[in-house]
Amino acid sequence: EIYLDNSATTKPCAEAVEACVNAMTKTYGNPSSLHDVGFAAEKCIKEAKKQIAAALKCDVSEIVFTSGATESNNLALVGAAQAKIRRGKTIVISAVEHPSVLETVHALAQQGFTVKTVQPQSDGTFSAQSFADAVDSDTTLVSCMMVNNETGLLLPIAEIAAAVKAKKPDVLVHTDAVQAFLKLPIRFPALSVDLMSISGHKVYAPKGIGALIVKKGVRLIPQITGGGQQNGVRSGTEPVPMIAAFGAAVAAQRTKLSARIAHYEALSKRLRDAFSQNEDVSFRSGDACVPYIVSLSVFGVRSETMLHFLEQKGIYVSSGSACAKGAHSHVMDALGVDRMTADETLRISFSPETTEEMIDTLVSAILEGEQTLAKQRVRG
Ligand code: PLP
Image (tube, rainbow, N blue to C red; front, side, top):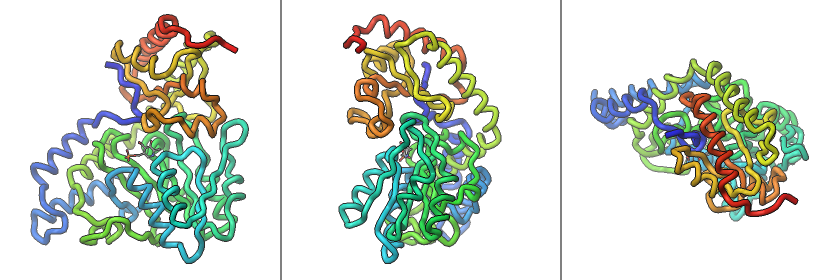
């Protein structure tokens, strides 16, 4: 099995599985209980918070656990928009956000908020200034992802936050850092953002756990109310096994970042070089993209057809984005990729286990697929 769909999800690491099982079998208490069994579970959560805080250089008190980045994005956007409603009702987002941001601001728009969408420049990259330009006296919130999940495009979030705050200091800035966390070096305080979403299952922890990092002093209106856990920001008994697994996965990877980046750069180069003489295979620009997500199009072969051809050989990739399955990609549209090319786009995403041999096998399989699968159209 050659699994090259790590941006969709990852296989939990041994450390995460062990921590999860330990929390289910040993520290099974309710962290809110006043006795020792509850206290042990609370300690488990504190340990995970320390592990995550160490990776992001944030404070442990700034971490709110959620059921995943979808919930983190919902809490950040709706919670901040509602908290700031007396100051204004305009939200600024980028045109390439994940559906969990897009659909959430869409719902806010139906409730009377104004949503402004920042488009990329003609070269497909985003300028920080365009976000500042979109901010007006009614703006209370800006949300921009760090790395796009479909193309690997890196957005200049530190510059965006600085430009936005220079224009209007009280605007809250949120970033969906799901595809960047533990892959790029991120220091939460250095980014000048107020809110950051991360997800466990993209970083070798299980699905169903995520976090929202909330800068000290930033107030959100809770979206899940109840017993007042997590300082009332997100009620519900904390899923201790998932939290423990998330913390353990983060701790296991935190120090390996730079070696991994070098590894991903080598893999990405190998894949690109293999097709450098093949004019039927085109890549999204490497310069503006992270090395662990490679977006490529095979001329004349629909990505779904190629995906299943590769699947028969035990190679697993994604067509565009797993989240945009079946639907037309708003990201490709925004980036000016024509619809035919968008339909021929594969997303290859690496993990530390990806080897050069796997890339070579993928390359041969794509070449074979390109020759075998009927050309559905002629160049022109
Ligand atoms: N944001 C981005 C950029 C993603 O790639 C994903 C992944 O699906 C999400 C948010 C949603 O994360 P989760 O699956 O944890 O809800």
